[in-house]
Length: 178
Image (tube, rainbow, N blue to C red; front, top):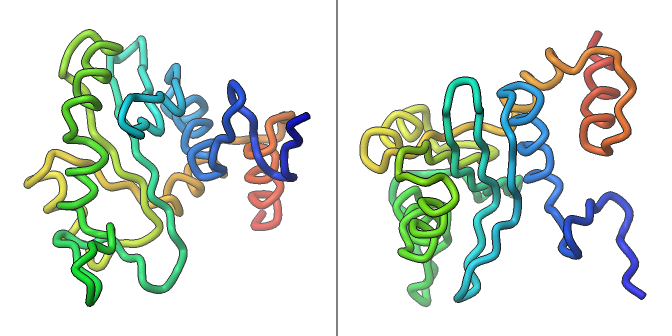
């Protein structure tokens, strides 16, 4: 028998990372989107989240890279370890491994029916404000901070009693600030 750890959300036998679940609920609640999570691809690739707003026809390919360690601040160019391995905290590297692989592009295009969609990277923090602007200009990637996603959710969540773990926790925290 497969038991779920406390705080994990099961999705078709796979566990949905809490930060992906929060962004998924944000897209549903605030952006009024239908969503698909954990789209599994060949070669060990996976798309964190796809979202579609039927009213505006906006489509989103969203990757969530929320690491709260002191060392992870999104930067434009990745850095390397002494061994030459990338730290995976540069927009350049994350674009290469998350958005650009042919298998990813083909699957997202197949699901959305076109290549007309927004690429979004959700992170904890950026090295400086220029990273957000440059990521959009250089790679066509919108960078969202999870703190802004949570803040907007807190403003929209209201007092309805949610059975969804992520929404209920955000709701409870939002009432602490009131």
